[in-house]
Each structure stands twice: as structure tokens, then as C-alpha cells.
Length: 304
Image 1 (cartoon, rainbow, N blue to C red):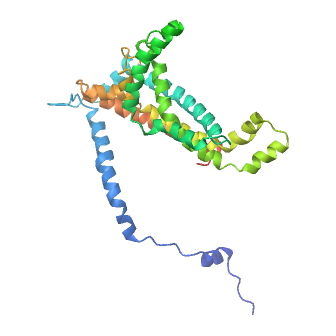
Image 2: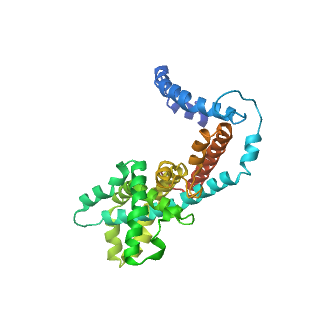
Image 3: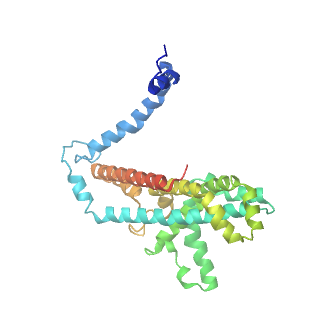
């Protein structure tokens, strides 16, 4: 009598390794981090969202007013200008930082003398406080640069660009990029070191020039690192605060006032609940931008 043949699914179930059971003790190690995150992040965020629905000014009595703060927020020209400046500043600075950092990484990864010493020099801005950098550049752009421009006869630079409502944003972008380039540079150096040297040698033997090797080999292979620097940079620049405070204090007028600076300023000027609503909107905007960036990464198939 022939034996009965087992069903393929039954055989698969029999050969499937047993599911590994997670020890309950492992979850206990998550409790401290989960508790700290809940106490210092989640609960304050929920309290802030509730306060945004009130007329609280930071002290005294308050009452619920619903979505009135949000209704005013979307028609406030100062708030809208802050969002426009922050988004524009972030985009321009991300492009500048990535272009400069990738260029420096290509130079520092080449066979040049004093390569190690130059890397140390370029990394110095990363370890200096942002507010210190802002005060130093405030002095340079307000005193040294106009004096040098007067000597050279450059008219438009003889006055501080930080005092010009049309050019102050440029000073903020340059100083922010000066501090942000080293961190992006480290990531690009890591990416370039991961590219096999044999690929460049083969391309050189095929007659590919320097630009062709960069466009066809280097750039595609470091595309993932470009995405990393873009995502991290955009997140950081959206929260720009200390450099703007030390450099222009949001001026002239409100020309360089970021969203973060607008929120913090409102907390001390009687607009507590109103700016808390602003913070909630800003949080939602940051989440939406992050999700869009992740979608772009997935569609392009970039592995991080």
C-alpha cells in the first residue's frame, strides 16, 4: 500500500523553524527610555496642543476659545513671512551646503599633500557654538567687510549687509552654511571612501575624463549620501534659531525672523497660546515634509 503524500503546505509548516520567543525582560530595558520620552516629549506636546485652544498668556486665568488662534494664524502676515523666510532659507542653504561639502570632499579625498591637516581645519566650525560663530561674523560683516569694501571701492558692500532688509538673508545663509558644511563633509568623505578605486581605474582606461567620471561614477554612487545630507540639513535649517539671534536678531525689522524665533519670542510677549498654536502647525508641517522626503527616497530606491 502506497503511503499518503503530505500536502506541500503541511511540509512547509513542518520544516518552518519555530518562532523565537522574546524574553519579557527585554521589554523592561525599554521602559526607562519610553518613560523619559513620554515625560519630556509626548506629555509636553499634548499639553501644548491643549493650550493652543485657549487664550492663555503664560500666567493667570484662561478659557477655551477653540480654533480661534489657528484662524488668526493663517492670516497673520508676520507669521506667514516667517514661514516663507524659513522655507526659502532652508532650501537655499541645503543646496549651498551640499554643493560646497561635496566639492571639498572630492578635493580632500584626492591624493594631495597635507590632506589630514586640511581635514582638521575644515572640521573646526562644527565644534564651535552657533551663537559664538554668529557674534564673530556679526562683527566681521558689520565692521571688517565694509572697511575692506571701502578700500577696494566696492560700493554695495560699504554698508553692512545685515542692516539691509534685502541682503540680510544672504548673511544668514552664508554663516549657517559655514557651520553646517563640516558635518555634511564627513558624510560625503565616508561615501567617497566606499567607492572602489578599481572603478575609477577602469573608467580612466576607457578614456573617461574627470567630469565624466564624476557624473557617471561618483555622483550615482554617492546619491544615497546626498539624500542623507539633504534630509538632515533641511530638518536642522527649519529649526534655525541661535545663529539668527546672534547675527541679526530677526532684523532688520522682521526680515530674517524664522518660525522658531517667532515662536520663542511670542512665549515672552503675552502670545503664549497663540504661538503654541503656531508651534503645533510648525510640527505638522515638519512631519509632512519628512514624510514627503521619505516617499521620494523610496521611489528613487535609494538605500540609506
